[in-house]
Image (cartoon, rainbow, N blue to C red; front, side, top):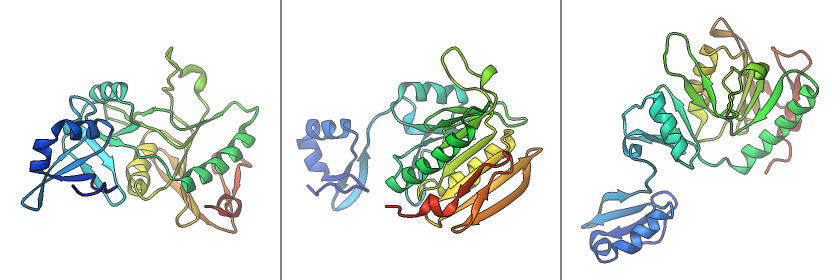
Length: 255
């Protein structure tokens, strides 16, 4: 039996699996993977069970790319899966994305920007919410909404868009996503498209790796303006007057 590898799981031979099936099933039940080999080649993998449809519908975020079963689900199926699972997940164009836990650097930058937003919106109509909050984004001529969990969202329409269960069903005015290696493509392509087409006014992309901030302004479901702010600059909102973020303060002395 090979030692646990964080990327591939526990590696065992087919013979070992037959002789110790109960032990390895217990290991998988604790949210670990077991890779089975035969004649020195990897032939199968045991993975933790989530729901009856997980084997078809799950996309797992990885450092390099996504791994998935290739089949789409409906909005109703996603909502059922999400309700039964303890994992964080998002739903974009019929595909489910499981969300990894963010790194410390991600959270540190997110916390600094959140405090800036909280200070600016104090005693104002618009409210600042911090992830995880499921937001249902409706795109024109597309029946099923996407369901995402932005890192930070500024909501100016809370009054008439909170359900009896406390769920937010409106459209945020401003959204912030902090990039990580596993979410970079999704945040900069799929999510940008969803936010643009659903009526969001402004989208901030925070990139701790490049130490910059990109701000997009949307109008009539299209990109109206965008601007990149590097260290030494002050990022300025296009949707809210006098909402600024000092890029130097955002990134200095990070872990």
